[in-house]
Image 1: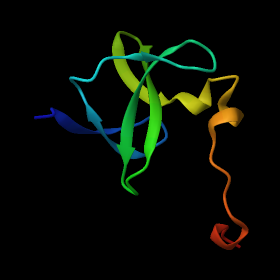
Image 2: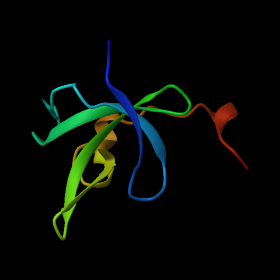
Image 3: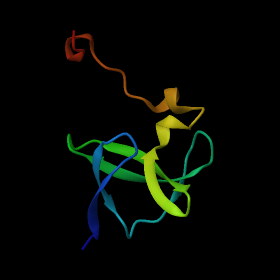
Image 4: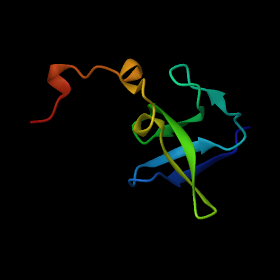
Length: 81
């Protein structure tokens, strides 16, 4: 059984995280990350950020210098106008 909880990322996105899951190393930059499930059922790499002794979470794409390597390409028909 997984221990999932809903969290709000810096920026406001709502995700589910398995708090029992171990951290893994980002293949792009080596940072320690976890994967969270978004409301659209896709997975998003996230990382903890300590601000004044309080831990917040943010999308790892915000800080990873290799983020472009891992982003999925959006099909032209899926783009919004």
